[in-house]
Length: 107
Image (tube, rainbow, N blue to C red):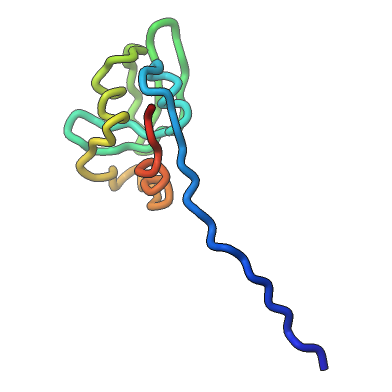
């Protein structure tokens, strides 16, 4: 009769994610795939396309938007400071994505 083998595994630490603070909105949206609306709702992004100086993207709830690619825009500022009221119920942003977003640091 063989005895069970137990392996000790150290607890995994949360990996800290870093982004440069003043990057174009396109780079940040491409990596994070989240967009805070003006009323504070956090939407999940399905696709992001750079079209000249504009970014065209589609959210999971079906909204299509066209914004300017800027380093100092409202979207960039809200993403850096992690300001949002609630996630969009139609986009169904998963909890693991919100945790990953909250552990992201901008330097």
